[in-house]
Image (tube, rainbow, N blue to C red):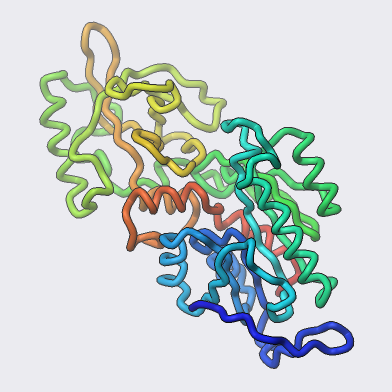
Length: 358
C-alpha cells in the first residue's frame, strides 16, 4: 500500500492528532528490505498500529507486501519526511554497509550508499520534534573504530556487538545502536545440520561413507532426485571437493575446497554441517552461496574427496530465522540478495523485547 503524505494538524505540544494511536505503536522502518523488522515485531508480541516502510528495491517491497499487505510504503529515504508522518514511536534502520565493510573499499561516508546514514539522522531528528521519546534501533556491520565512533557520537549511544550464531546456524557479527539497554542473547547451539532440508544427502550414502570414484556419477543422480520439487533452487547434481582438516574451535567448519570453481579461495570453501554457515551476503555473481558437504566420500590418487552442494534459499531463510518460504515469489537471485541484506530476525526479537514496548 502506497502511503500518501497528508497535511497533518499539529497541536501546540507538537503531537500529531492521529486518532488511531491507541491501537499499538507506529513504526517507521528505513532501508526496510523485505521487512524482517515486521517479522521480529510480530514474533516479539509487540502490537503495531501502522508500519511505514522506506525501501527502493521493488523485489524486496513485493515480498514485504506479500507477507504484510497493510504495510504503508513511503519510498526512497531521501524523500521521507518525519514531519509529515503520524507520531512515530519506533524507528528501525539498517543503513547500507558497503562503505564500512572490511570486505569493501573502506570509503566510509564518502560512499554515497553509507552516507545515507545521515538521512536516517535527519528523519530521526524530524520525528523527535513531535515525539522526543521516539526509540530507534540502527544495525550495521563491524567496521573500523573511527567510523563506529562517528556514528556513536551522532546517536549519543554506543553499539552492542552481537553474533547471530547465538540464535542461528550463521556466523554473522553486527553492531546494534539503540536508545535502550541491550544484552547478549542466550546461545541456542544451532548448527547447519539443524536447518538443512531433511534428507539432503541421505539417499546417496550415510554421512561419512567412503565410496569408489566410479560411483560418484550415480550418487550425483540420486542426490538430484532428492532435489526434485525445488526447481532451480538447487543444482542438478553434486560437485566435487577436496577434503581437509578443520579447526573444531572455529564456528564455521571449513572441511573442503571445491575443485570446479575458479576465483578467490573464499568462493571455494565447503563447510561441514557440524558447524555454522559463513555470513550471508548479497551473493551477486556466481558461486557465492555458502556450500555444504554432502554424504559422499571417495578417494582418487590417495586424495580424500567428497561432494558438496550450495545451500537452498529455503535454508538461507532459516539462517536468518525467517519463516520457511518467506521470500518465495521472486527469482532465486533476488531471494538471495534480500536475504544477504536482511536481519537475523531472532536477534532483533531479543533486542525489541528489552525496549519496553510490551
